[in-house]
Length: 62
Image 1: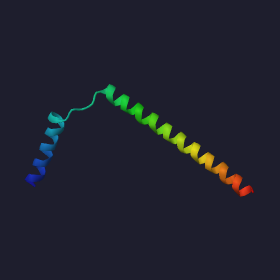
Image 2 (image 1 turned 90 degrees about the vertical axis):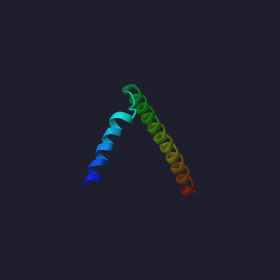
Image 3 (image 1 turned 135 degrees about the vertical axis):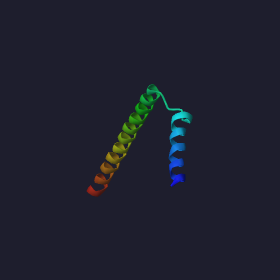
Image 4 (image 1 turned 180 degrees about the vertical axis):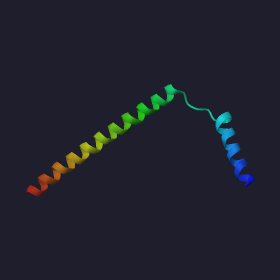
């Protein structure tokens, strides 16, 4: 049990003293990049799906 408690004490100390947390500005910038990338990727997938759907509909109509 002592090892268990020691582990959590050391983990807490590491999080408080040794970890460099990002600033709010860095977090907001990173979130913007993630949202923009997700939107761009979803638009690309939508576009490819639409094109493939149109091509297959054309082929099936022959």
